[in-house]
Amino acid sequence: MGVISPLLQHQATRSSLQGMSAYGEVFDTSETIRCRIEPSSKRVSTEQSNETLASAKLYAEKDQALEVGDKISFDSITYFVLQVNKIYGLSNISHIEADLGVDTTSG
Image (cartoon, rainbow, N blue to C red; front, side, top):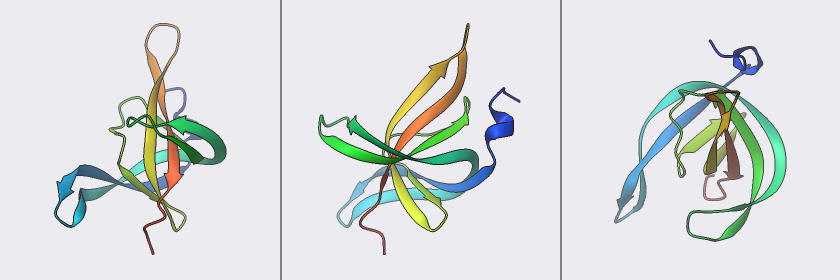
């Protein structure tokens, strides 16, 4: 249990991006993750060197699997992971922070 654990009071659903098909993005089965999601407004550069606006920040344990492109569903909103950052403590990784954008393609 990490130092950040008591702060992770939310549960969200994560679906990992597996690739593309002729019909669009293909996602793996969903899993429930412990996290904290806070509203945020920040410009983020994506892997394709595009700038977009992140609308939330997700905090999770250091061993939580999270990749750019994954979908996160929380409080009836579907987000997609724009950027994943490992935050370091004194000598090792403390936790993960991810910038999330709102998925405008979801109903």
